[in-house]
Length: 266
Image (cartoon, rainbow, N blue to C red):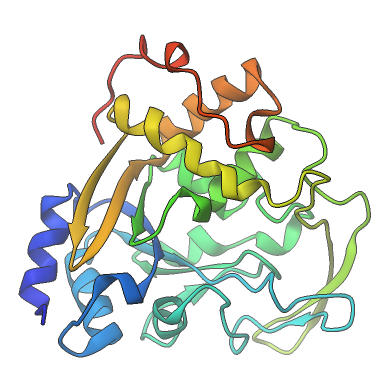
């Protein structure tokens, strides 16, 4: 069984710095047996990241639909795992008002980080939290999961105007604010005639590891990938400039596209 001390050591060894902005995609099952279970995992990350900004996705895209339209950021459960739902309940954690792709954050400037999501009709707008990760040169940890969970790449495709990634129509979603107001927030949804393109985001793992934009490590039992979000977005944007249809299939990214790139350590 892993203790908090074990996890703190693993977090440091993979290269995370306490002052980072760190977003974590997670699989609790992959981590294995931990003292105090999922709460023990959160305890370790919260303690380690105290000087920085700790962020978890708290998505609700699975349940929001044309019939279930009211998003309450204070009570709506996340559809992306136990760690995200427990994180929402921690003291000081604040959540963005994004009806489908919210995030929760803990840190000195968490409120300013999550602010403004109700303004945008793109679930991963460049001006919202997913774009702020790029601006802050954040790090992303894939804790026991793969790049198929790489939400920011949905944003990168939209920011590069890749066609057929968002619905033409707007879903009539609403936000119940903490002070009791209801805000209308019609929102486009991720959609593609090619199916779930995110399953092909895993093809980014090879180039990101080869250029040292990402590195592998273990936290508990979880095989994990730690990645520089800013560099990943830039290199992915270059790939999409060369091939806008990059993610419609599982063919690997050609090695010559990235072999000459200067290595950028995480």
